View: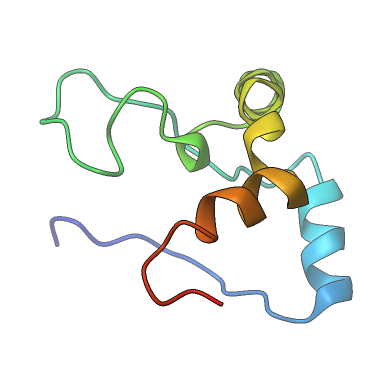
Length: 81
């Protein structure tokens, strides 16, 4: 059936760490330019990448997600205290 995938959900902290450390598991399938661009099939969607490419993109973004940066951004949201 179109659109079906096999997946396993891992929720316990130890299991998640083990899964991310296991190189046999793929966390992303990359971007398919033959398909329409969607949230999940869009260049730069971090979860669509694995391995070295994921690491390269993550390093470019990580500075914007420090505690200080996030606190500064959310402090400007209406009603945030």
